[in-house]
Image (cartoon, rainbow, N blue to C red; front, side, top):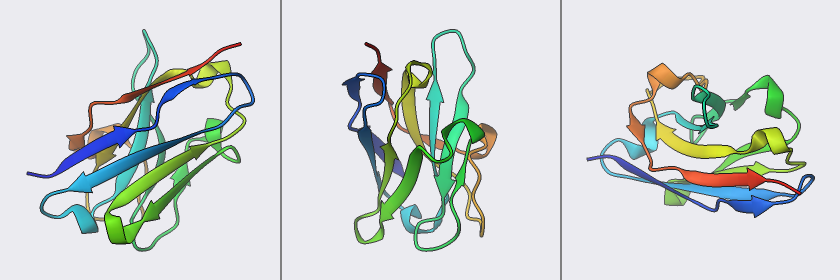
Length: 125
């Protein structure tokens, strides 16, 4: 079965940076959209960023544009989320997920079917 595993969460002060990693394995890992999502307590899960490993323009939620960057190490089926200029409102459980095969990927929660366990990101002074 396809699996994704996140790592790299932690606690940081406002303005700080973190990099999350997502390792995908299993059948079809190389041809599917990969996305990052987050869910804060009491809120719905929302899409943060998505890309098609190996090609295609990444997409971002408006709230993270210019601060977060999704990238890949395609040879290793690893996707990263570099988070800079972190704000307290970025505090959430962050999830990586694998979605459909598509030429352009968007972080739409309902389209993603294989989810990791999540990694906590806390931004606090």
